[in-house]
Amino acid sequence: MEKAVCNHGFFMMAPNVWDPKSKSLTRPLTLSNSTSVSVTISHPRTLSFLVIQVHGINNVSRVDEELILKQVGRMLRISTEDDRDVTEFQQLHEDAKKNGFGRIFRSPFLFEDMVKSILLCNTTWERTLGMASSLCVLQSKLADGTVRPSSQNNKKRKRVLKETKESSKKEAGGNFPSAKEIASLDKELINKHCKLGYRANWIVKLAKMVESGKLNLEEMERRDMTAKQVSEKLKKLSGFGAFVTATVLMCIGYYHLVPSDTETLRLFREAHGNVECSKETLETAAQSFYDRFSPFQCLAYWFDLIQNYETKLGKLSELSQLDYKSVSGCSHMKQLKGD
Image 1 (cartoon, rainbow, N blue to C red):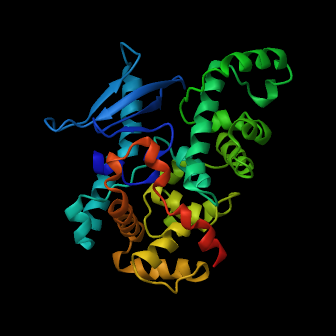
Image 2: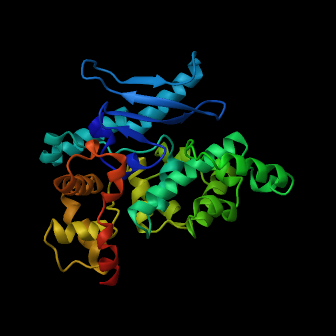
């Protein structure tokens, strides 16, 4: 489980909380009535199965049990299809097999993956972590009524202001907001609480497309469409450039594209000795370098990137949350942008 979780920045982003000592993951998951419940997932060495602890509920219904298992299975990529991908990739990549690498951590739902992919763009890793945390705080306020959907703000203005003042004493994070919750807000309200900048507009548009049915995320996940068809559909969305599209495809299970950004450029210069690589040549260079691992180019890239991080910082699974902001080459950001 440790290897299946601590291999991508998403595990460091709220509402995920990894405990290095117990090697367990705690976060809210969604129940059938759309409320959230805190769940801790662990894999004791003495057991051959995962242990899932549901907090705050004495009796979990069969429906909710199945829904929780589905979300955990998605996060850890527990499926016949994922098993096949891992086996085929490790046949191509001996070092990955030795290290037990092959399952890239993701979120309980594709919508969360998509929003988090947008949060990665054109900013520092530290700010990305902050934006994700702020969205979870906003979700908790939506859940308890402290913040109300945009359409209700005028009717409830006095009550909202009073509750906001009282609740400002604590900033407890909730679950990651759903498409329905974000679709009920406007970009101004989101930015007031989360300071996402231009990303807020992209995220609201995405949420409204999902809620209206114009964008069917379940269809994408079922792989009823080819990777190319999914890619073309994603690229038509606001904010979905090459990097975000490649990252989302990876989350779905299509690994043929390398999500190239400043971290990729740093890796090529630093670890692969390609000092002549530039922003203009990076995407082509990355695809060419990892083509020998087709159709798992992205997995091979992430293996190299994780190895690079852990050479400098030690095992990611053993870092404290205070050290998460150091897990990137963001200190190189200005230098690379200026090249």
